[in-house]
Image (cartoon, rainbow, N blue to C red; front, side):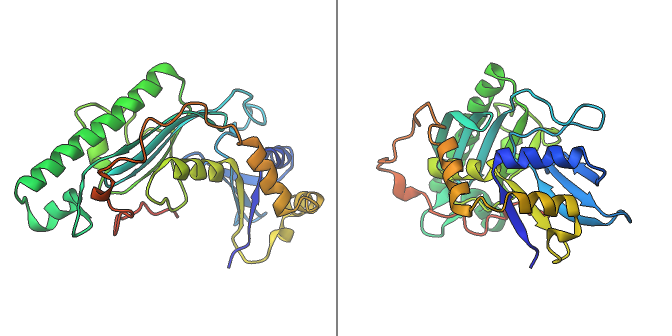
Length: 279
């Protein structure tokens, strides 16, 4: 299997600077916020996913922009959504939404049921109404974030089935599906709740190195030397640093009460939900 290495944000930013000031040939994919390191023949050797708060400047624009990175994270599954506003990696506001969209016995969302069985009776009309309100509420919160703040990136995890409902809601989404700020989170997301939102954010705070040829990172001397230089920092110390950095990341309490008596209406997992593939 390809070798992977995760770096805390400060080390990832330092490595980015080392790469940018070296003679290494690279290609940057802004949609995936990922740098590909090439050999002399132009063949991809290593992929370097940058932490979301670490910006990448094009050639001639300096090593990296100094300004703070603000982003919105949006996690959606059938009947469950967690959305938050982040400044430079810290969550300043968040909201969790739940809706009666899932057929209780079958564990299938009403949207998927309509594709196979057509409309049912009163229950389906209730679920469809809840679906409409669900996306309107999500977009209302997004509108607030975009009106009150400068948004540099939009980190999103949403099934292909639900995306059209997000973009065609009566309350419009403050971005379209071709917005260059969109970033599909390269990680499987469990049922979106507050803790899952924070876990996804911690994942996005780290850089990720992936060797594409099972040869390790020694084939790229600059990269190998950098990793060797910082090898003294153990995984445990790295985890402690990340935990310390994000310990006070949330300042606004969630408005959703987890003791909601209707919680049994919602499925714990969005089964067969066609999570967007990441290649």
